[in-house]
Length: 503
Image (tube, rainbow, N blue to C red; front, side):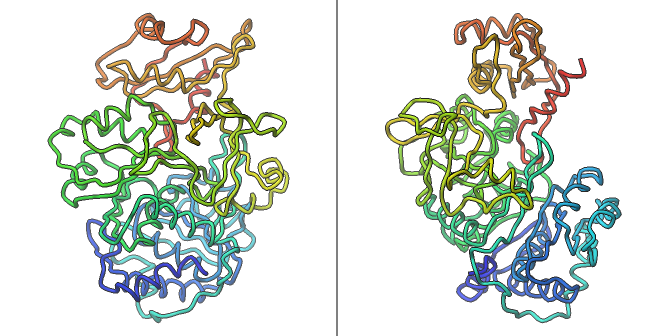
């Protein structure tokens, strides 16, 4: 079954139901199917055939959705990338994926030359001014047929390559299948009891796995409605949550912190049925504050690009364990293993491994990385975790983020949880700083809720002492106006390590 068949089915069942909207346009399921079909015809006219890659550099807009599903309907492989990437950042991805078509926002037109120079297969470029209702894509498809059939129906085929951030080297392209994406979205819909009555706000970037599967695809499978916000704004999000009576919203930890710090958060009426979080560890302090302010429990889950992306989640009706990422999704298996691959007993820390239909086929044209990550049918996530006797999982930290001080293992998340309990701390992130004697010492970066407030090392060390062993207390604290983040809201530890290196 082709992933785009999701739209076809809903267009037949509920043609007049609102599928998507933004500040300017409202699109029903029937209209969405027609726009996707017209875009599919356009791609075929431009020479796209089965297995070709289409590079998509668009922000949050309706055109992203049209192109995403049209590429998949063509039997091509969609390669969505960060809309803020520069020519230098896009060069390797273009060289690695060899797209035949580059669909790009006019605001990033300077990247066209880099793609032309690095893809021998490039046939055409479609430049779209997403700020205009009369853009090149809409003009090109307006006279094309509104009906077409998918070219590929084998749901084990790869339909998307999502490149990882490349924080440990060059980006790697995770190959995701029709079946993996569809089943992940359907399972997520089922466990969160989503229906056509749900209204989703999408404010996280659509090129990101969580926004695609857990927002866009989950709502489409449920037959619900999604509002696509072009650019995140805390003011705008709060307004939309109330005015649109949003029932379903993905909130990364950094966005939770920003919403809670907004002066008018208590003045808004929220209609949320499901508020869920992931993409980065969620401090328990933020979970508690969110529930106290909003009256809605945050449902914490866990996933990664290579798993389409969701692996575990709490359930709305089940037990919630603060600090846990919940239990494995149906049809997904998780095992905690030591360095030799041996299964660890309950409460013992090890690497989280995953098996299931959501797991990627492998990394595009990278057999070595694939073999290192998928072993004996299990995907090794690189995350250190443990499982309690009820099957609830807890992420301790990223394996690569471990700080080793004088031979002692220190997990940054534990320290970050403590820093978030300080009444003036807005965000915190902990890394290892090189030390000639101890190997590494702990270095904490933080920002404050009120930028006029300054916290000293002594003040923060005194805050940590009752809750942390002496060797875990940061030797250094650096206050920043704002911590560096990805466009999905995840704090960028590599950028913090660069700050240490430059000192």
